[in-house]
Amino acid sequence: MIRLQDVTKVYPLAKGHSVTAVRGVSVEIGAGEFAVIVGRSGSGKTTLLNLAAGLTRPTAGRVTLDGVDLWKLSDQEQSYTRNRKIGFVFQFPSLLPTLTAHENVILPTIFGRNGAEPDARDRAAAMLERVGLGDKLSSYPRQLSGGQQQRVVIARSLINNPELLMADEPTSNLDERTEGEIVGLFRELHSSLGLTVVLVTHTRQLIQPGMRSIEMAEGRIVEAG
Amino acid sequence: MNLLRLAWKNISGNSLRSWVVALCALVVAAFALFSTLLLRGAAASLELAADRLGADIIVVPEGAQTEMEGALLMGVPAHFWMPEENVAKLAAIPGVEAVTPQVYLATLIGASCCSVSEMFMIAYDPATDFTVRPWLEARLPAGLALGEVIGGDYISATEEDNGILVYGALVTLRGNLEPTGTGLDQSLFFTLETAHELARVSEIAAEEPLVIPPGQVSAVLLKTKPGLDTEALAVEIYRTVPGVYPIQSANLFQSSRTQLKSLLNTVVIIMALIWPLAILLIGMIYLMAANERRRELGVLRALGATRRFVCESLLAEASLLAFCGASVGVFIAVLAIYLFRRLIMVSLGVPFLLPSAGSLALQIGIGVLLSMLSVFLAALFPALKISRQDPAIAMRE
Image (cartoon, rainbow over all chains, first blue to last red; front, side):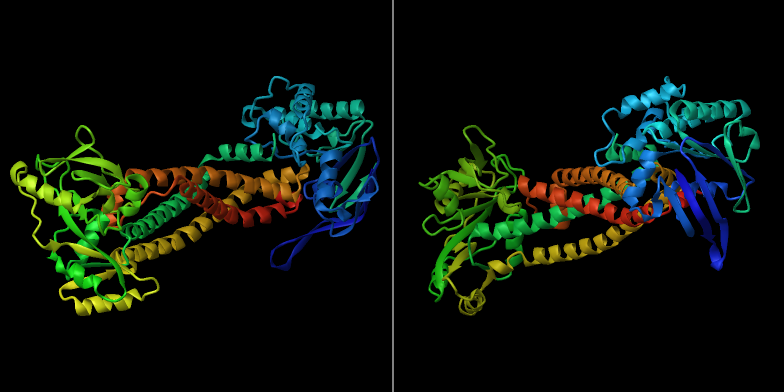
């Protein structure tokens, strides 16, 4: 499904300096896998996820999704691919504060020329019901707890029925109990919907049987299950 | 949910920023429309007043030019006289096609014998007149009879049966001329015969008699033959008829035109300062807003929004704010012009004619568009800059 071939990412810094976040990484994640990318802070795992999702252009190497080179697509095609094939869950609060939970979930459906699809409202309500927030449709992010906000984000990531779910440290700001609930939700979605899941975390304890672990250090994959 | 609703939601969620942008749009639109209405209204008024007189040259006693303009522009009664024989002298000058005398009068101040205090009145000779004739031909082909008058646009009957009390005599208002925005709108027109009758009645019915010096007129209006150089004719009049001053229609209201020109220059300077400042301020606000919302816009890109969508979303926000601000701005400008029209005329010393509904709508449209264009231009650079950023970079702290 996703294939990174000899991918390097260098971030330019001030005064002609630069930092290499990912060095010559090659990895393939197949359809239906639950891959967990682990590593310490600064090991390059978030950059690897961003590269795999086409959120940042590799300095060198090739990134393909279902055999298509993401960086040979136009902005419109690339955006469409992200919108239709990939669901994102971020580490930071990523809900739009001016929209309700329901509107936030509808958001990924409005990027086409004609705005939201006719059944988007119903689908969004069903998604919120599925993540246990059927009674929070009209709530604004500030009225929800951290765990509830991440559940809304998960509902948003699923609204377009993606094949791939990418999560970057989705539980880092949550307490232990909520973290367990969120990871449980990912497992449930993986098994019930057959989603491919790529989860980035610095907590090895989250890796459970049936998951593939990919460990990174200093921009390289040091161990891949 | 669509792009516009998303933009509106963002506007309502960032009230301070929205207020500042809308306020800038309001100021630009209000100032642009107010100045345009004022300047165009004043210019149109001057043109119309000159056209209304229908003369190519107006001959007044020497030294009475300013008083004449004051009477025509602001309705300040004029009191000047010259010998009636000048009419024949002027008619005899080669190149003169038609001449008609006028007598300028005024009602008394605060006297019970006059319904309206200090009203400018113009008595014309119906045999030779060309000032009110076009109006009369269209509406009163028989002309004005003794004791009948027509008024400027502001004149209305104060007594029963369309009556107006003038020097103790009741005259009948037969109609109103089209508005010019000048003193002519507050003036009364009647025949020389009515003027002399008013003078006769006033001796017994008024608190003070109306005096028309025998053998005197106030001004002579002149039409030249087609294609004639009016300037050369004016020089000839000045040379051959002593004690008079010929004012060419094109030069009429010269002081007001100069006043208008200076007003226009001031407006241009203020606009030249306000407009770039507003664009700069809005640009800076949007640059800050775009930086502040970098992560949010990065998330939109990650979720599948194209660069174009992000850019359009920011520009839609800016345009909506501009539209709201500009709409309030033009409303304030129009309201101010309508409410304070008299005050503006008096304080600036220029006449003013309200535009027609169509012209007003056009000017409002231009004001709103100008304001929206300013905000659009100001928001364009930040919107393009942020939309071109890598989503992953935009989402980083």
